[in-house]
Length: 170
Image (cartoon, rainbow, N blue to C red; front, top):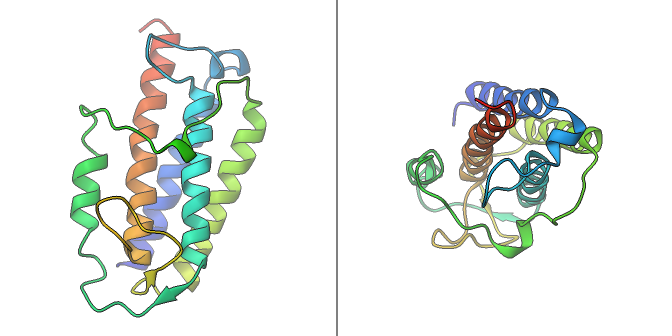
């Protein structure tokens, strides 16, 4: 894993997410834009739940890896960057149906971004994370966990842009 590139991509992806969330009002953040959609605030909360879990995974117990530490990277990219396919979230990262405070979401996302960048800079990305197994993939490496966080967040950047456009009437 190219550490510099991972840092840049993580920072850019979270900056895009934060910009998208910042571009709408507090009221719009909690408005369902179209049938079957989450609100932008719920999307942000979903990313917080998911990426926050991955910060814990990255900093949790690890073992040496006896395979290519980036073996799952392309699979993750093909799944999460296919914006035409709707994916189902595991229950533990489905956001509550409630009113969220946009500024609190922004602050949590900024902290997660900081924690991810610190993990990229300081941790051995070749180690396998043992805190929990991913569906289908099993235990993943830190490199794969960072990739997951980037591509998963990019997916939701795309979603927030669609929500903002719908709310703006475009």
